[in-house]
Length: 213
Image (cartoon, rainbow, N blue to C red; front, side):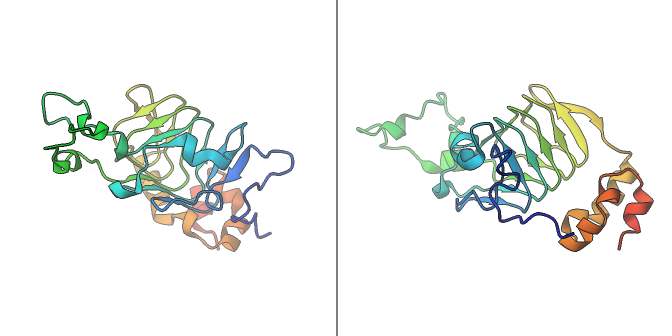
């Protein structure tokens, strides 16, 4: 039992072509997606970048990095730093982008100084329908983002957040348990080991998971 091929675009086809592994679908130099992370959309996952990753201009230099085994529901949106406006002056209006003399005197450093950096989603993260992730956010391993949440701050591992702005709702596990899971990092195991130990991974017996071979 080796598991599905992570390089197949539609692992559930022909029954469910709305679900797709994103790694073989997404080809963008500033987006990195791990094996088995999928996007579910009734219109198909092929247009994930155009629909879900907004203002991802490669010349800006920020990246979207999503780990392995993540589940992304319909309408998830990642806002990248290209959406930012300079806020250090009296007006946030982007006069310079319209040219015709308005670009004169604009200092790109004023905009670059406000870039929030890369957006990073850890492994085994579930992001609910129509959730929005703002630029520069880090979401820890095992976190859950509720539907329609607007994530404006980093999310700790194994934390459930929701609302606008998103706030912690609960911790999925006790801190000691969460740390043991982070130390195990089952998502980095070889596929053969993951496949052999699915019952432990999707179960709730931590001792059994730690004894996996």
